[in-house]
Amino acid sequence: MQLEVRDRFKARRLAMNLTQAGLSKRSGVPLGTLKRFETTGLIAFDSMLNLALVLECLPDFDRVAADDNRALSSRSLDEILASTRARKKGRIK
Image (cartoon, rainbow, N blue to C red; front, top):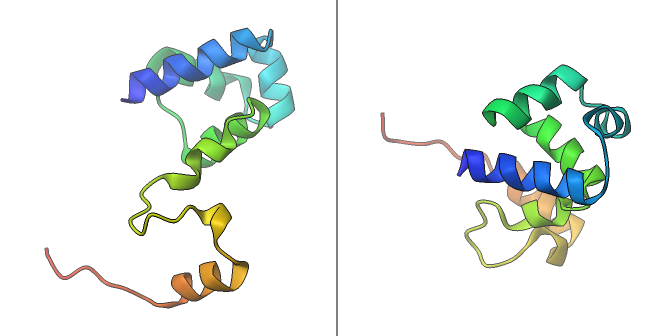
């Protein structure tokens, strides 16, 4: 999955005719980080989101790990904040 995402991001960058340096500058992600991502698939999640914003695929992350069949974009801000206030702990060690 990790390598597939890497390949998709790189293909999208090339389809938009962006160089690595150009994407790095527009996204604020250091060039070295982008090069490592395109080589190994390793990247911090916040950096990936910054790249996704520039590559116009940020809405694709809206459903990641959603378990209630509702995308974040379909919920009100009050609903989102209310769900984050309820602290939950895992019980299994």
